[in-house]
Length: 75
View: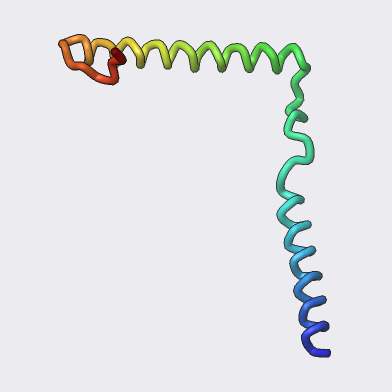
């Protein structure tokens, strides 16, 4: 009998903790006050910056390996 009471208490406590955790997170992450067009522009800009950063890193890596160092070259 004691086990059932303890188990139901644990369930209630876990339910309260879950509600407390979910209350801090936004329900809809897309609810950022932007229109779909503004969101697309923001995402496109972020993607361009990411691509430019990756390209710049590839150039730097290419210069490091240009001295005849064979790294991951397939035959």
